[in-house]
Amino acid sequence: MKPKLSSFKITHTSDFVLMVKANLCTAIYVYFTPDMKQEDIIAEIGAALTKVPNSESLIQAGDLNTRIDSQSNKTSPVLDYLQEEGLSVVNKASDKTYYCYNGSSAIDLLFVNDRLSAISQNILYNIVIRKHLPVETTLLLKKNGNTKQTHETKLTRKLDTEKRGRKRPFKALKPRNPKFPKNNPMQVWIEHLSTTTCGKETRPPAIYSTSENFQPITKQQIMEVIRTSKYQKAPGPDEICNEHLKAAAPTMIEAWVNLVGELV
Image (cartoon, rainbow, N blue to C red; front, side, top):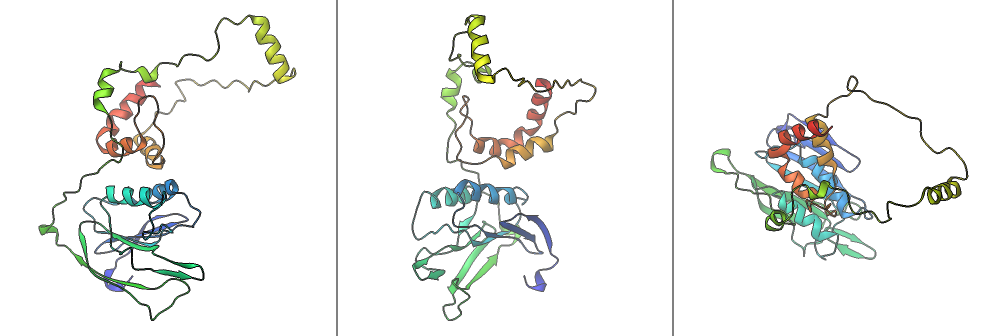
């Protein structure tokens, strides 16, 4: 990054992501291996985005190994997620940024939020760095006074509130019907356990906890669990997805802390 953008501060790092906050904007640099699954890509990007304020000008650039010139089961969820987070891809699908012996693709991508607008983007075909071509992009930084944050998070999976209202409250907390009857004779249990364990002691040592050494669950712990939860996962009996929890966290976190404290 050019010195005139200083000062710099690294605000997030992982094996695949480096996020740097500069004077004018925050930049997220990424590299994801070709075999990386879409849910892991989304989780890596999401972990960085949670640390970026909504008012921050944001650039995300790098090799996503998620080609936009050929839609796939991997490309669509990643692009949909980034769009939900208010990021728009600058690249054109027809402009290939990667060339190798078996073909070419558009995998070196640039995304910006609504506080930045792309004026031009050129691929420098006369400069070859390995198999990746340099991409030169000119961006316009919008002034704070002329920009209103109108972005609203859009969830790909909607919560059916009418269906929720027709169900009994806290039904999801009730135990499911057992697969086996409860009235098995004791002799059946003895024979089953004797065959399974072959007479070995399998019970772990008992560990007792008291209220004296119990540490209450904190807001940071709950937010960390929600932050690291993966997208596109099946919901539980309440049909609430991880995406819903992430979107509701800023508003509901205090209520969740109180609720968890009462349950434990």
